[in-house]
Image (cartoon, rainbow, N blue to C red):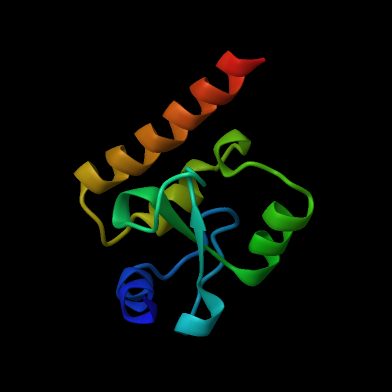
Length: 102
């Protein structure tokens, strides 16, 4: 499982939440968009340790946080528009699902 996670981490160089540049694999922490699904390319975002701490301790949901366009530009810099659309649609789906339950 570690090999699969490292392969997913290898292509992303910025934190999804704050946009901080992440130099090595140990700084990159996988966060699942949908916690009920597994770790796959279409269900994860990479966070820095500070942001992961914020999301895990304070119980923020990644799909409820507004991410600036500048940070999204950095995060999706070396990815296709299709991948960007998949991730943003997954976040939107979870947001709709969350608000639909209330």
